[in-house]
Length: 247
Ligand SMILES: N[C@@H](CCC(=O)N[C@@H](CS)C(=O)NCC(=O)O)C(=O)O
Image (cartoon, rainbow, N blue to C red):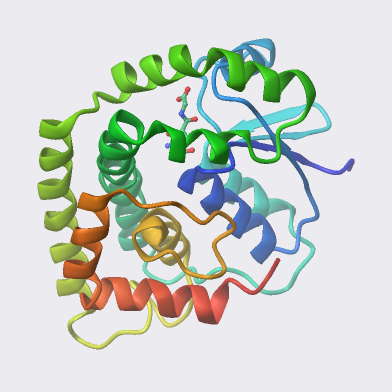
C-alpha cells in the first residue's frame, strides 16, 4: 500500500475527525492542504459527486467523508487496538446526529460572525500551509471565495442566532447523556462517537492539541464564556487531553 494522502482544509473540524481516526489507528498518511475554491475541481477530477473534504486517496481507492475514512482505517489498520465496538447502534446514531447537526451548525455559527464581519481573521487560516499557486489563488480570489461561502452556508447575524439555538439544544442533549457520570458517550472505552463529538465540538473549546488556533469574534467569545462550564465542553477538553496524543 502506498502512503495514503488526506486532502483537508486547515480549519475543518470534519477533517480533524478523519485525522484523529487515522492517527488513532496508527496509519501513516500525508496531508495535502487544499485551497477553498480549488478543492471542488480536485474532487471533480477524482470523479466524486460532491466537493467536500476530507478525501483520502490510497492507491486506486478514493474515500470521501470522515465516517467512510474511519471505516477504511478500521479495515486497514495493523494495530491490535480498536475503537470501542460496544453499543454499535447507539454509536452510529450519535455519530450521524453529530455530523448532521452539531458539525454543520457550529460551522454556520462561527462563520456567520467571523466570515461576515471579521474576514481578515479567517483568510490567514485558510492560507496557512498553502504554497505556490494555491496560496496566490486564495489571496486574489478571497472576495469571491468569501461570497460563495456566505451564500452556500447561509451566513449572517440572524443565521448565527438560529445556529446558536440549535447548538444549545444539542449541547443540552449531550449534557443529559453525560449526567450519569459516564466517561465515554457509549460503552466502556473511546468510540467513534467520542472522536466525532470531540472533533466537531473542539472549535468551541480550543484544546491546546487542536492544530489551528482560531481568533474568535466577540459574540462567539461571549457565548463560549457562558458555555464553558457545561459538562459536555469540559468532557471534550478531557477527551482531547486523554486521547488526542496519538499524532
Ligand atoms: N459529512 C461530511 C462533511 C464534510 C464537510 O462538510 N466538509 C466541509 C469542510 S468542514 C467542506 O468540504 N466544505 C466545502 C464543500 O462542501 O465544498 C464529512 O463528515 O466528511
